[in-house]
Structure formats: structure tokens, C-alpha cells
Image 1 (tube, rainbow, N blue to C red):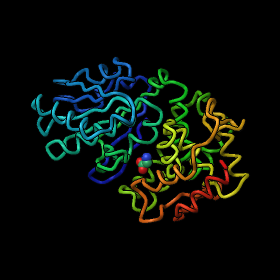
Image 2: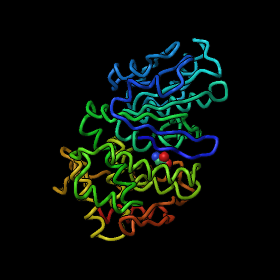
Image 3: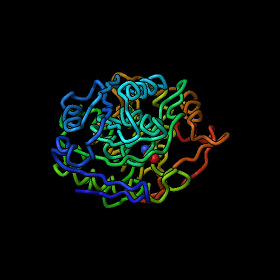
Image 4: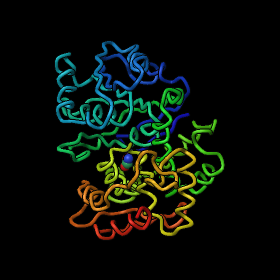
Length: 348
Ligand code: GLY
């Protein structure tokens, strides 16, 4: 299955196919050098399969986790290309999750002012969200994605088979991003998830494709996130704050961050039910499906302070995405007082 992303001269295809990893050489142009960027949580055979067929493959393995998204690691990737004599016709391929993709894409965007970049996402989260849309970045001094560029890949290759080696917790994080998009923009998909779930669904390929159709539509309309694309931040404002303070996984924090953004309780309950079914947290401690071993939720003031430090904050306010109904959202500017109130209403 191929989903085209129509961005004028930056257009590309997303190929979704079981077993596609070993066909990277057929799908991408391989008669050149390649820097494969992967992480130490990804089975080595995935990077090897992706590298097969390239004239010369150089592999960089970064440590899994957000802490690897440093300017130093970015420079190291560029240095590897320089040392191997990469020219403007050579390319970078990410084989991994969002961290590998963000780092690899940013290195590709800068090396010789931009060389080709391909993405082979191996986590559900990166398959349905971060591999598409051209966001690349590294973190600086604890601020996520503060140095980066919009740099579209030349192609994205999604092999659903690789999800077999994903831990249930990581799989659930990808499910959170699918639920995020369905809740805001696709009532039919949300209802389908309510009926059949994501993890248990034998048609995961179709769910990935449906989520990517939403993402593609949004990115085609607003590549640089000046309008509609901000909808993809549903749950991310509070989510980033929770992530900074607790160190929980990104998707888990997005799940928690979505709940206070629901406009009414029945809607929130509906969302809670689908999140809980996928093994995602809906609270911190209280028998509501919260996180085992975690007795108290994080301090709201600390969460909101971290959320307001997020780069998307504009002065004293941040644009939040509020869910009015399944498939219906609004943007609302909120200050820290409002965010504390929202947070406490659900987790207080
Ligand atoms: N992950 C959100 C976006 O691509 O805009």
C-alpha cells in the first residue's frame, strides 16, 4: 500500500508493506553511500537489512532514548559522513524510532546544506507520527526539539512485521498517537478503535494507514505548523510537562495530557476507555488504571512550569487543542493558571 504525501517539490511516498524492510534496496535509490542511523534498542538485523544493496553503508548506533538527541550526537553523525567522504548525492537512512529519525533527519538537512533522507520507522509511534511530516531536531539544555528544521524525507518505508519485536509498553505509546489523531479528526476510526482496539486488531496495517491518512492530510494543508498542524499537539502541552517531571514514556504522557483537554466528562470517559484498553495510563494512583508503583501524581505547578517552557509557548500563553466531541476540536490559548485548573480537574 502506498500513501502519497503531496508537498509540491517535497512530495514523497509512504510505503506500507509486510516484509518491506528487506526491500529497502528496491524501493529507495541505492547506488550511493548511506549513513544508517539506528539505536541500540533496535534489532541489528533491521539496520543490516536496510543497508543491504547500498554501495557503501556506514552505520551509526546511538543509545536509545531522548537523552541521545544532543547537539554532540548530531555533530558525530555529520563527522561520520565527512570521514567517509559523503558527497551531496549520498544519503541518510533512519532505522528506528523517533529519536533516530529526528537525529538522522536533522543531520541530513545540514550536511552539505541538505542531502537525501529516508525513514524506516520501527516503532508504532514513529510509523504513525514522527516519520512523516519532516520534523527533525535535537534538544538543547533540557528543551526538547529546540534546534531543528522542517526537512521532508524522500521516502518512508513501514514494515508492520517489525512491530512484533516491540515491547507492549512501546506499542501502547504508538497507540496513544493513533487515538490522538482519531479523536480529533476521524470519528469513524475512533469508533472502530472502540470496537476492535489497536493492539488486538489483526488489521493493524489498515489502522496505521488510516492514521497516516489523517497525518498526511494535516501536513499537506499546513507543513510548517502555523495553523491546522497544531491539532497534532492534542495532549502534548500537558503531556510534555508530565514527561519532563515524571520521565514516563512520551505516548503515556500524551495519553494523560489528552484527558484534561476534553470539554465534558462523557467525552473524557470515552477517551479513557480506549486508552485503558491499550494499556495506557489514565491517572496516577487511584485505581482508575493509574501507574502501578506511583503513589502520587506529579506536582501540578512543576508540570505546568515545564509545559510552559515548551517551545510552542507564546509569551504567557500556549495554544491548546480542546476536544469538543469525537472528530471535533478547537484551539484555545491558555495561561498557566488555566492549565493548572484543567490538570487538577482530572488529576487533583
Ligand atoms: N508529531 C506532530 C507533528 O508532526 O506535527
